[in-house]
Length: 300
Image 1 (cartoon, one colour):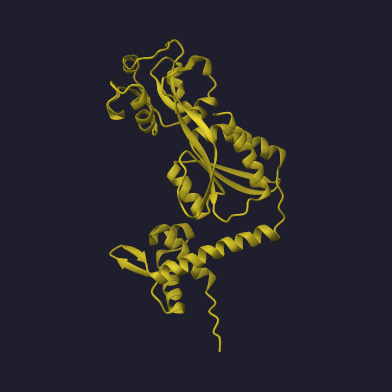
Image 2 (cartoon, helix red, strand yellow; image 1 turned 30 degrees about the horizontal axis):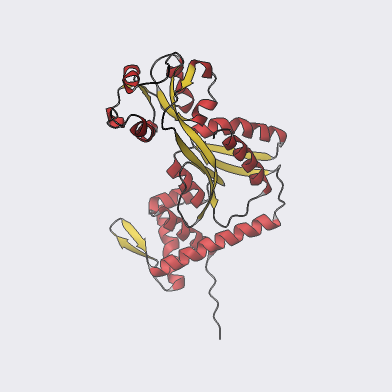
């Protein structure tokens, strides 16, 4: 006699989310459940299988070998179910919902184009979230985002990545500052800082001012702003300099008051689009990808 084990799909999905989050409280929040409810689903699934699926270590846990196998099965089912839904659902480029995640600078270029798409197609719903790269990857893996735009290729087995192009990392100066710019001139101006500026400075300045640059933490600060659309404003007013990918300047209205310095060692940041591996691209996603690729082509 052959016994066929049919896993409870609700318990299985709860377990997959728990495995992805690595934390009961975060899993409960994501599932709109209570933490005891998550624990109850886990216990029922373990009872159904007759195997422990996690091994607790204080407040933390790791998956057992059985837990890893069940997680992989659940993830494979997700892919298969999504493929089935895509197959049986009308694939209309003008209808449906898409969730896109990218940097704030890229969002400033993409969102006006997204608005134009939605105006052309009232049945198309596009959500754009400007968020750090780590969050983009997490969201794509979890299925929160259909598409992510990142600057570093993620080496992850459940992600498919394709390079869109590259964009220049720009040293932005008040228009009246002439080339060649010296490190002394920059220090006199002071840095318009923002959340990503330290990484940009370490990358660009270590190559162009190797004798004078001692690290981003040693730079003279003039001001700080974390609103991406406002970062170039002090520079346009003659108050300091800053560093941004070209997309961060492209959507700024007062570009005539800002100059991009010509440096001996220019630096470029790659642009990659990422999706969850195995996901079948819908017609609406392909339509948005064409726009993303068009924007990326202007930044090289």
